[in-house]
Length: 128
Image 1 (tube, helix red, strand yellow):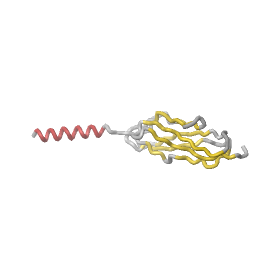
Image 2: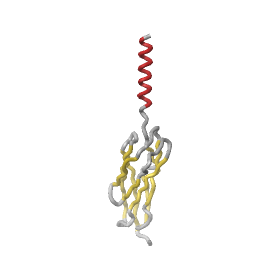
Image 3: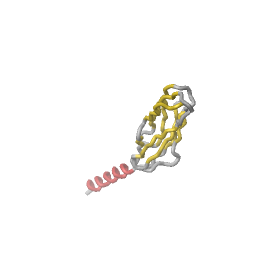
Image 4: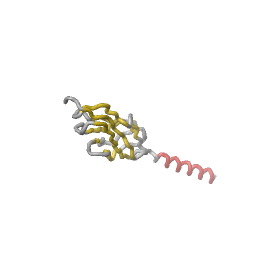
């Protein structure tokens, strides 16, 4: 009888520990956005879409660009499990013409707390 009670106790403890393992998971629709050819002075805003595929609310605590020419904007509210969110990125298209590649580091409470997403493209002269 003691073994049965002990086995039941251990089983319940394992189950309660497992129930506390809820984590958020971030899954981006795409991790790289290709602007293609963008006219100098043109629209530099793009949006990364993501889904919280975990079972706990996802909190984006920080988004940081690799340079001052790219300004990311994070969602302020937590993203519930199964819901989608957006990170808006604005690249300064008034820079010199030529190719560009920039990285944006996303910090969150997800199972992978740091994720790097990227933008790339080429600024070209054009009538604006």
